[in-house]
Amino acid sequence: MGRVSELFRIFRNKKLFVLLIVLIVFAAIMGFSLGQRDKLTWPENFVGDTVTFVQQWFYKPAGYLAGLFEDIRKMREIYRENEELRTTVARYARDRVTYNRIELENERLKEALEFKERQKRMFDYEYVIAQVVAVSQDPLNPTFKINLGSTDGIRPDMAVVTTDGLVGLVSRVFPLYSTVMPITQLDSESSGARAISATVMEHKESFGVIEDYDTQRGMLVMNRIAENDPLSKDDVVITSGLGGVYPYGLVIGTVESRQVGDFGLTHTAYIKPAADFDRLTEVFVVVPPDIEEAAP
Image (tube, rainbow, N blue to C red):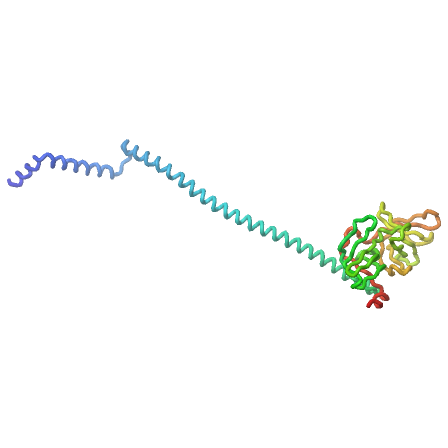
């Protein structure tokens, strides 16, 4: 009876009774909220939508910034790779040019060496290789310079050739360089270049004198050819050694045509030069044996 009376006394206290009811309702709501439900109440939906809306405004800029930094990093890598590729391509182009230049130079020198040995065995001349260092643009003095002079044993009136054929004569000599008068300046009315006494490689009985150059045709003019001379088209014309200037056996060119001369007594032939005068790089100065032995 004492405990029942005490319980009734507690319930009579309204504040404690209300507090007990609130605790029971709160516990029921919590249990209901934590349980699995298919639908949410509108306050819960409102709160969830609001939080989601606010989150997306923070999430999207953060995603954009992260993507921007990633794109910048990738652009730097691409730029670095492009710079490396440019450097590699430039190095390849430079090395290829160097290789081509060395290859061409080796081919020229190899050809020149074979030419020198072949000619030396044929006629026992000394061939001194020289580099063309300048070409005169003066129409009154159309010479070119080589990098050999008197200190190298070069003398005036020495013949100059390429691996293809005769080029000209040494006209002036200086200690360290010389000038060469090309055979394309031959003119019978001028004393600037020496006439060339010529014959034909195929038959030595042919004879003529080359003393002019036809600038319109780009050919040497060979005169004083006898009517019964066997010279014909495509014959290889060489120096005859007569006259004491050009040594024997230097290739001049090939016969392009032959016709009766102006006065009808002899014939004239047009000779296509064997040497390429537009691309003179290395030439040879021909030193005959007698001059070679007399040189100090």
